Image (tube, rainbow, N blue to C red; front, side, top):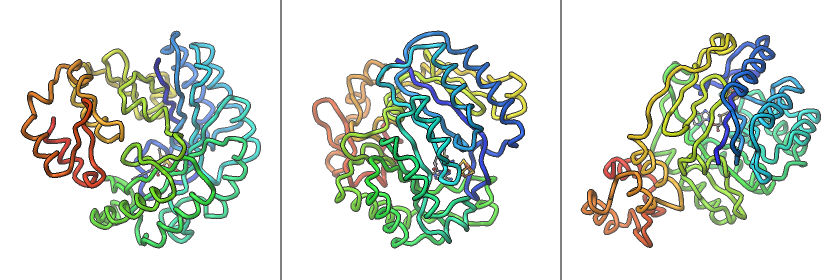
Length: 357
Ligand SMILES: C[S@@+](CC[C@H](N)C(=O)[O-])C[C@H]1O[C@@H](n2cnc3c(N)ncnc32)[C@H](O)[C@@H]1O
Ligand code: SF4
């Protein structure tokens, strides 16, 4: 089975830290949806789909009827499995009763809501178009869709430990089954980068630690570095990426991974609307092993050494010395053919992964 990612490059305003393709002028929305539908018709020719994720940008700013058209097109070109996970990203300020109604009617069964922090002053400072009360209103409107995820960020300018705890209290108090916690990345070209702000890695690590302990005490499992869930409600779609399943990426700047090829769509909205969606196709067969090592070690399931051998790398032969050393120092465990990072190893994860590649 394969999965589908669909990118929507529209937002109400631009957050100061944002580096996604998200600032397309709203007047182009109908043309964009038309181009998207045409790309899906061109490239999706049968097969079964296990998950669909509509992200952005802000899919909730789309005009009513757009998601219906997009999902109808997908369903007309392939079989969407009966138990498929279908997620749509929402920003609190654009969630309306009509929008929720369309989600339900189109079979959406999971939403991911971007809160980031519940501190109104911080939200304003990074130019988010919503506040805490807007988030609460959106969360209530979205009650017909039980499977909710909330995004929070670590290391926002001026964010304190108390801010983070307050956001975690709010979200866990609502009973959100899934929480994603992202450490702020200050990417070149963003307003935040231009302002001279730099991320404080040590403080972000402290915030992460605090959140990890807090969420563990509330019964959330960390199943991937940035992702926590209760009652097994992990994101099937994201798990598919970490498990290297094939996926289609439709829309501007979307990436696909299909039959050993990595395909990057153009990140130019005008070009995309003009029908020129594909930008680059690269044979990805050679880097499957590397990719698998990088992605699987981020998950609690860990790295299946047998599977890696299938990709042509016998890690117990090529990296035995390094593995033994990491196990001895308490960074890795090796059991039943799986290598896993220990709880204490997440800060040094990048170094460990680099030395196993
Ligand atoms: C694809 S984004 C878009 C979601 C939605 N538009 C929003 O901002 O709420 C998904 C998530 O990535 C995270 N994110 C965005 N920019 C980030 C950055 N510069 N560093 C770390 N996380 C970021 C935010 O938590 C955001 O909710
Ligand atoms: S709402 Fe999300 S996608 Fe839009 S500008 Fe902000 S971070 Fe970027």
